[in-house]
View (tube, rainbow, N blue to C red):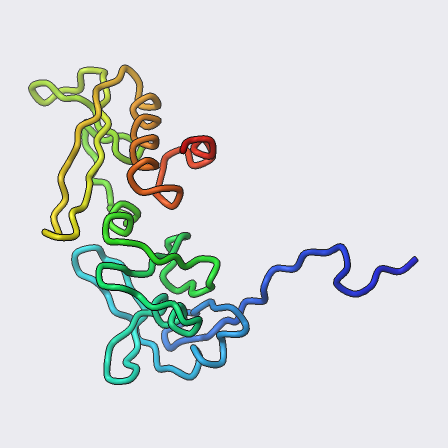
Length: 195
């Protein structure tokens, strides 16, 4: 017995790829590809972070790829909101990858290059406790909370732990409580039951 077309199978939305000068490619959902492809996109590198956003001038104002795609689907950004790319790829404008977020979540999710050194951990939000320039064998967890009113961050120290993993788990729990399930975590699969 033959299956009817589309019956019993799940298909991912088709991805439209829009080639740009310099070899870059924007990824969008197929239904958005024609509109997004008709706009002149250019790279916009942010000096402080080193990230390259894709920007266009539409209706006299500059807009970024994520906000442009969300606007196609009648999502209106309020003051203090912006669009984040869940997978971190700023050229990926598929709607499944885009989320409207406040400044706090956006700041927490940004990727910051680690400087290295004796106090550095492999985990986000974790550093070695140092004494007179040498590691003590203990690890501290800390969370930075962004205040959109002042546009400044405040660091909250969560405690010291004997292992990096314990400190990383405490950090994950804290950012999940502050920013919700879209927060960038060390062990994202462990946070499903927290609420």
